[in-house]
Image (tube, rainbow, N blue to C red; front, side):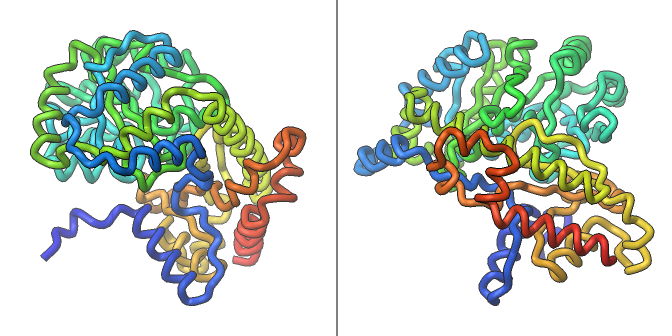
Length: 415
């Protein structure tokens, strides 16, 4: 019998639910599953083909040239001083984060809302989780005061998971907010695990880095899934500063007894992704322009519906709250965010993920909207003037975005 404490990841469950509806011939507007709509850059695909014959096991820590490129890339981007010895390659950053949680001796601090996987991983590792509440008034960024109150709840060693750009809110802290959080982390000797998987999809170009602000006590994780459109390739990495190499070593022991190493051809191909070649840089620049235009358009539409929503500054998410519709929803027997999303999907085909999946109270009526319902291949082929067209780009080339938002608005108006 399966322990009811542990359930399938809500994001993966939503993806399967949408597939079932489509197999029944129903139209689905996919705002639920956060998968990049862009193709993998062609030079990276060609590199995979060139190395498809590579079949030998690689070192558990990862291919040395790949780790060198990742360290050099982060050094150039964040003005830090990583070496290849600091880097571990894993089958997605999800596995690296899980291994860190499992091997860390202490309590785990997690903001609310946060990515659906953090809390279940902490529970599976049988570690104590301390939730730090935040709200829309600070654009879903935890405050230094809230962080300090959480630190005072335990005398154990502490690790906080900070995910910016954020899933599910799209938020990024200002430098002032980030520095305030770092001051508390230093005061209480808290390790920061910066899940930076959306770092290269930073529309605000703020490039906030806890590794820069607190280099001796910050672990950086990222990978290919979001910015490179390669979620199914399952390649992620963790970067451990030298003072945290004892934790790195325990993670490596765990890796040696679990996944052994990441697929050899994919590791070789990933070198091309981090060489920062012109084609990859151009791909990334175009991707961010497209996402920013769609984010701006979607934000205006959600605001016009009366949703409580903050701007998305990176990644591809919004976290609207439907509190203005609370009375109407309650009259329909829709009392929770889960019921809201279930009814919306069955009535309109619009797929959102409920706020409860991200650690929010059911009565809040919040949900995550992933603005990825568009043809990334087609949009990347547009000319420069079309990429800079803003709302016109969305209206001309993103019919699913427009139709889905229209269905959502119509449903809310007719509750």
